[in-house]
Length: 164
Image (cartoon, rainbow, N blue to C red; front, side, top):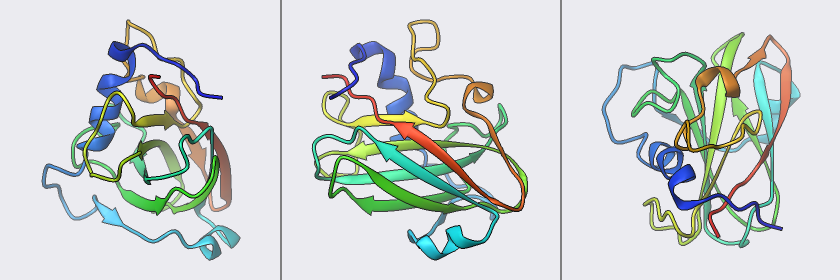
């Protein structure tokens, strides 16, 4: 079952996730890594369980950010990105983290795989599954999506949201 959100509510967040790689950034940012489940046997890492993916096609882009106002959903400020093909209504991604700290994860489902944000079909989700409202225009505050990681593997769940 899809979670429905009005067009204006999720647009800003989907656009931020979809265009995060456009701007150039300093060396600590923008690492594209493979989805290696072996990384989730030792930490620090985040095991991201994603549910509610529909339809079962396209690509998931999972991005890790530092949980700060300067970094969260800012262009080029993501730390690590994992892209995986969608094959089912759920997926598991192992995201390495640079070390203990406070982070946030954003997920975008590029349904047609064109690399662009298609507001009417693509979906999105974020750590802690924050409510999206007209007040935040689809971009929750970094504090709403923050979680702490020590030297362990932290498990989180993200429920995808779609407009239609």
